[in-house]
Amino acid sequence: MHPLKRCRNFLREDRYAQSLNVDSNDHNTIQEARQVAQAAKREAFDAAIEAATAAEEAALEVGKIRNQAMRLQLGVMDLVTRQAQGEDRSEQIMEVTEEMKANIALDEGKEAGWEL
Image (tube, rainbow, N blue to C red; front, side, top):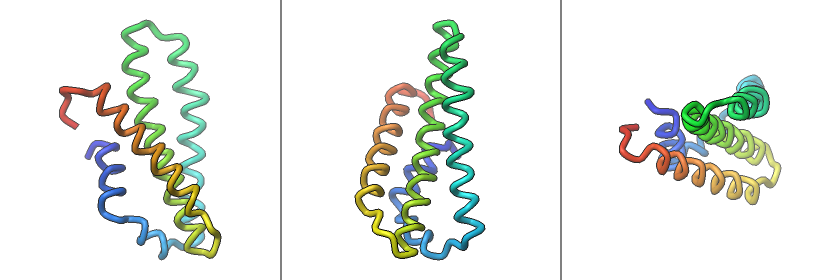
């Protein structure tokens, strides 16, 4: 399944509730995966986009947007897990969710006409 379809499904299916049952090892994995996605943005996508031709840049931008949406999904999962553990993260959850929705919409605009 396309990675952004998974993000949309995460939002639609109220997967937040599943974060209530995340153990500390799983929570650490979520945090590490988010950090890997952030590093990919900084160390891979940004540098590659800077050095790319116009045609390459367009393809790399799509990958960067999808990576960002995945990183944000992991961020929401992290925040929801922290909230389930007693921290008030509701405002951050709303902000990150909106940013993720914006990235999904941006990707859909770039991919107009492509089957996802």
